[in-house]
Length: 181
Ligand SMILES: CC(C)(COP(=O)(O)OP(=O)(O)OC[C@H]1O[C@@H](n2cnc3c(N)ncnc32)[C@H](O)[C@@H]1OP(=O)(O)O)[C@@H](O)C(=O)NCCC(=O)NCCS
Image (spheres, rainbow, N blue to C red):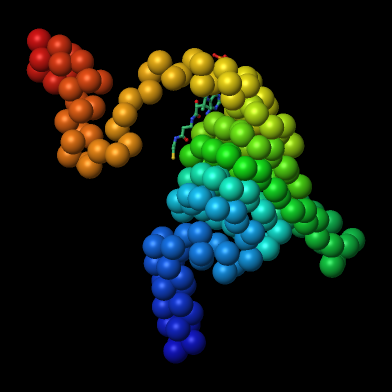
């Protein structure tokens, strides 16, 4: 009972630490991480020491899976068998919300992976990849050219200023949903 309580408290403390200092918490788990990375609620799985992230990587709710648990189906034939491969992410990579990265995957430099993608194969440098399995759909240059006209300068604003700015510029005040008619 006491041991169980201690375990739960330890896990809770670890979770708090991971929330407050996600990069150093990941490094403590053995993940190799470059400079200027942003990690939000990332799951590094059972072999975090096999994961390498370059500089300036952003990951939100990403799941890194380094082991192929499907060996389960052959447990009687190969009781000791595991299938485990490292994962590498290059420099300047944005992993969209909820991306899953499978064993053995290498992601190149300057890459955007779309929200919800399952990355099963290597992704080359300088591209945007989306889907299940993730495939390149455009170059990172094409992404920039398409979207830069719509960039807005909200990054340095405090929450209230940003809210006012977005409501003013992005919400149609004549919409029937907000009584603006
Ligand atoms: C991947 C992403 C960057 C692409 O942006 P974009 O280049 O402006 O996208 P486009 O609208 O030109 O899409 C290109 C194609 O990919 C598809 N696509 C875009 N994002 C996709 C996604 N996440 N999953 C699957 N398909 C996607 C589009 O439907 C389009 O397909 P089509 O050519 O058949 O019509 C963007 O859609 C995305 O997923 N951003 C991440 C959002 C996120 O995670 N935010 C949280 C931040 S912490």
